[in-house]
Length: 78
Image (cartoon, rainbow, N blue to C red; front, side, top):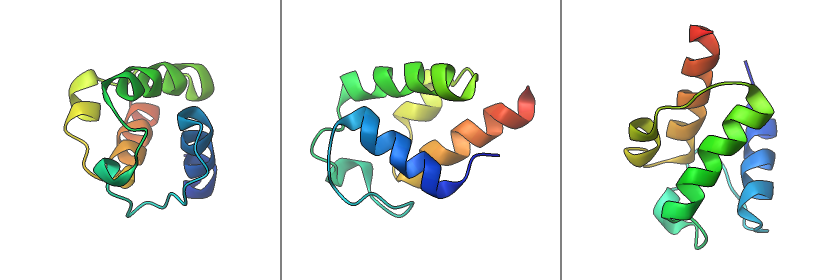
């Protein structure tokens, strides 16, 4: 299982932002979150965590915690 702190750091790095990101952050409140970021997130999850994330779970995510849960669900399925 990936720590929430590490996940937030990785997401922040991927987005190239200095915004304060927490598990409760609404993805729509992150200025750099867009459809390209969704694809980049899927690639990051595969590279950093060695998991395959379903695009649908990223598309339906509302909070950062939803992305975190998708990654951890994929880790558990491995």
